[in-house]
Image (tube, rainbow, N blue to C red; front, side):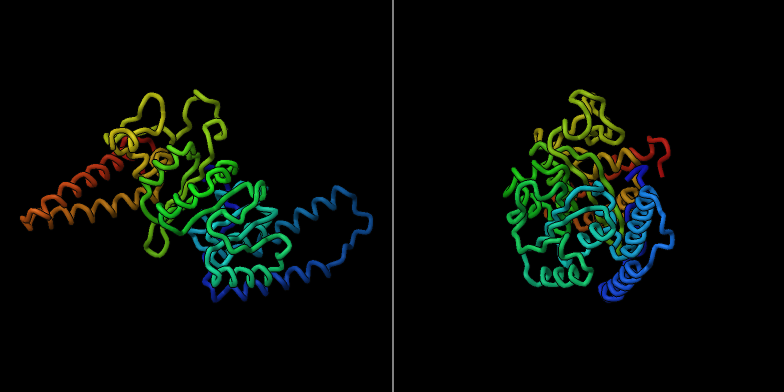
Length: 333
């Protein structure tokens, strides 16, 4: 996030290092409990400072347990919010956020019993059973009203993520924020969010293991986005049509109007507005691939390839329009 220090940082660790990490955390906690206060007359204010230091030390023990993709999601969560992690897998995100003090409580939910059993084991090893509840749940079904402020939903296709939100739209709209990372069909998913009344207020992207991951933070209703209705749009939130121009109202229109696509829906308006370097890397790589594909189709001279070539040319035009946004913007990569 722009201008914000990462809450959790460090290189990603594989599952094989998880046990070592938990043992280190347990050892550190035990040593902390045994450590005596040498200042018998410490004032209350100093005691509060000591608590802050201990919280910071706890956060240090959780550094490096998340992959780059999960780290990106963790950095988008508002500190102090209670977490509902939909599709929690092995529970790493909930453990890291609660263990480091970012979230006071978390609900780790998964529709599969296998990953949930692993999550329960990891939560127990981290000593966080009192703060993290692991539940077998299809989407948000087992999350009660007002139990969570932040929903994280990641690692699944855009259509499936849409189904999860539609199934419990009342709960989704009641949340303070949604942290979402669809693996596919991002243009459709962004259009769905807009049409369902959500406003994307932040976006981020990482490249890990040769794959690109795009995340967004959404809130329900423009008033919940921290801006009054009619206020000027923030940097990176202006709507762009396929020519790369911005509309006067700063609204995300295009994908739902007459089937026209917008660059915001295709690639993320905030990422484009901020000249995000990972998106730039993706656009360059994709542009090279699609250009080669166009040349290959042009040489085949078949009816099927001609139809496919039209689709490819359209994507190539979108990619180049998006790249032109970087060229026109100050401080472009």
